[in-house]
Image 1 (spheres, helix red, strand yellow):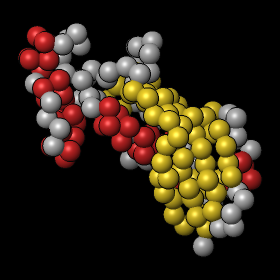
Image 2: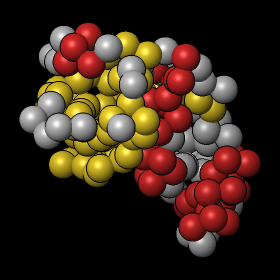
Image 3: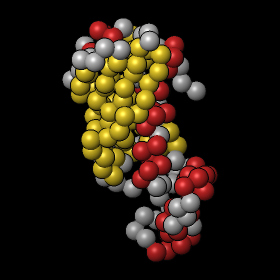
Image 4: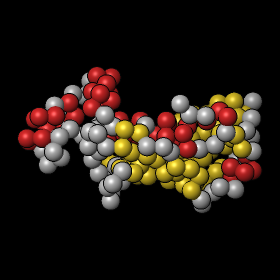
Length: 158
């Protein structure tokens, strides 16, 4: 479990991180059980995700691979693990993506982690900060990342 709420920094310290690596998460294992649970939650039971024998036989992956959206959904947990929270913020939201690309498949059993560069911090609206991150989800032992994204989050202040 993350200590996200225990790791707070002042807004000016957060904005000072623009252009730098703001954090790297721990490794998350992409187990077949996790992939199957995601398939059940999203009703996407395509065999390349849920049938290890068939996927080994009929795909170039040697077995099952995680859904791209499963990998993307782990960004929240990765962010909680890697990034500080802006002090005195009373809530944060996922605002969306400017860009999201699935670069390489994540094979079942592999581990992934998020690497976050704070690309922009917009404090122009009173009571909120918009944070744009350049995110790379790395696959342990692989040259290509699982995904790259431009992710936008917002934190609000009472």
